[in-house]
Length: 57
Image 1: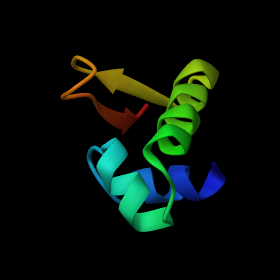
Image 2: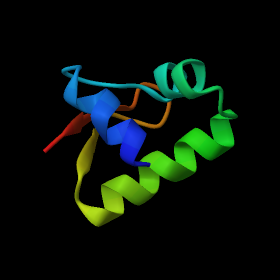
Image 3: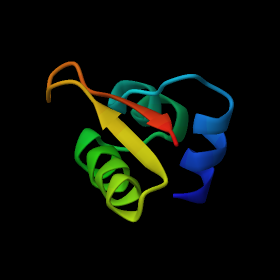
Image 4: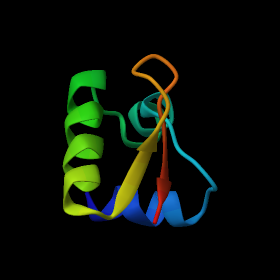
């Protein structure tokens, strides 16, 4: 998950698709990591499930 935070630092916003491609994860795993990072307060989610993006706080 720390790698995802570093990845988010380099971008204005990230998507689940970008995480799956960058880290070779399944979509389920990427969504779980992003949800956990959101719950911990490191990133914030924007938009609905289909068009959801994340950005670092």
